[in-house]
Amino acid sequence: DARVTQTPRHKVTEMGQEVTMRCQPILGHNTVFWYRQTMMQGLELLAYFRNRAPLDDSGMPKDRFSAEMPDATLATLKIQPSEPRDSAVYFCASGLAIGLADTQYFGPGTRLTVL
Amino acid sequence: AQKVTQAQTEISVVEKEDVTLDCVYETRDTTYYLFWYKQPPSGELVFLIRRNSFDEQNEISGRYSWNFQKSTSSFNFTITASQVVDSAVYFCALSEITQGGSEKLVFGKGTKLTVNP
Image 1 (spheres, rainbow over the protein chains, first blue to last red):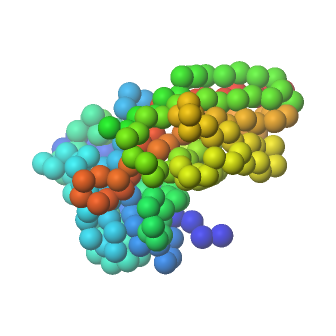
Image 2 (tube, each protein chain N blue to C red):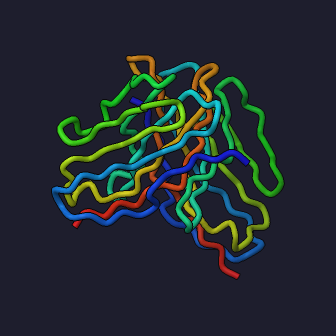
């Protein structure tokens, strides 16, 4: 049963610290998405990769967030410096882009708390 | 821009009752996809169904069924004979293709379903 994995599952850090979240997409999938979930905003797309290339990061605060895919099995989302308003659950999802709108399979999420 | 509205914020039912979760969407695209995801208390998002805009046939999967009506821009989800394990937040989502050619899901705010024993 192939699944998207994310680490860490929980992260508590202090304001100003760097946070790195990792995602391993389902083997064979060629699209990766990063979403953020908060009570106020719900689920929002932060970044989108296809074949490891970033196609859309318009939802991401550019000054402090960065997303990369060093290889096909690893995607990272980094926040530097972190702020209390970044506290949220961050989900990674992967899919297989064949036509329009491939189904996105979500990982378990990383719950981030910035004090 | 795309928009998904789930007007029911919370629903509470007693086990074995049927329950329908509403989803209304807005889009200018002629081709689009609709999804339902389940988020149980453990927090993960579980894919339930994907439906494209050209297929208006209703779908049934066990106790779950979906009613897609293009005329009213609705994609409602019914759980028959609900069970306690169905307690979760359910999200309806709509695909959006951005100008850059990428895609994303636009999610509704979710409906929290509580099934009481």
